[in-house]
Length: 347
Image 1 (tube, rainbow, N blue to C red):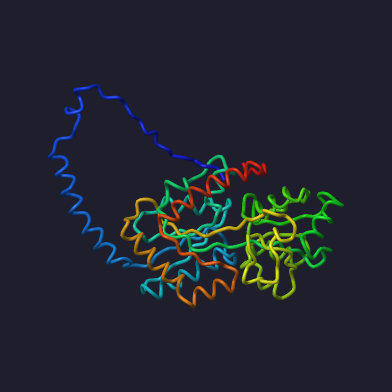
Image 2: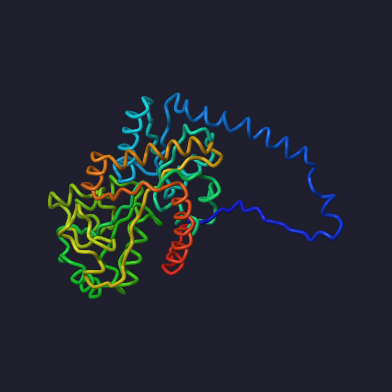
């Protein structure tokens, strides 16, 4: 997911001896700046105290029914209950999350437009040449809401019930087994690409645009495999309509405790999961960002929400804004390497 950086070069110049004093701003400029800072601080704090004074919009990067949407709707509901203001969910799927990210980045930075995405936010700069956003510069991080494992599922007709059996089957007939994803560059696509690379097998990719159609075609046997997030397919696994072969994280998921990890199943070192950040447009006043962070972290810490998320295969986090900022930067670098090794490209 390509990075359309708006980076500004930091330019420096040497200053000859004797000119430094002349180049210093006059003391009056400092006094003026301090004066306006003193005036603006109470105004910002007052703004945060009155916030929110009207309904908010929560832009969601993907279509209804997926795990990002499920978590966003729960958080939106609890924010509405806490603040007495409606949180309108605005699903904007398309281009692996790029359309929604561009829309959110251009929104007015007043705290009334929130954005919830996935790891695609920092993966896309390595997959696309031209993006309508910069994942670091165009957003103010609020909190890392949660992390979610993917689960390797198969249609019941596939004669494999664990990772080793699947690998053996794929090696006997390279390229004849297909797998679904919700689009090139999606979490499920890259997780499966990593799986293919580490297992040394060839599978045929069948990309879809929305979760609903992907689920429908896997249930009907139109496609054989998929590596979706756990919440997206948990009911179908519990109903026996999909076979869960392994989960993608470093440890088993409480929601599927009986299902081993891919690493446990023979591919040592395999680990891949996605995560859901909450962001606002860059330039949103810090007191508002802080108020949002405190409220969402409190929501995630409540016994009700924590229990509901864990039961759906979502692992609540609730980080500080600074921790999310650091996470975005490190994940941007990490996924650039993964994408390069996989050879994946969207445009």
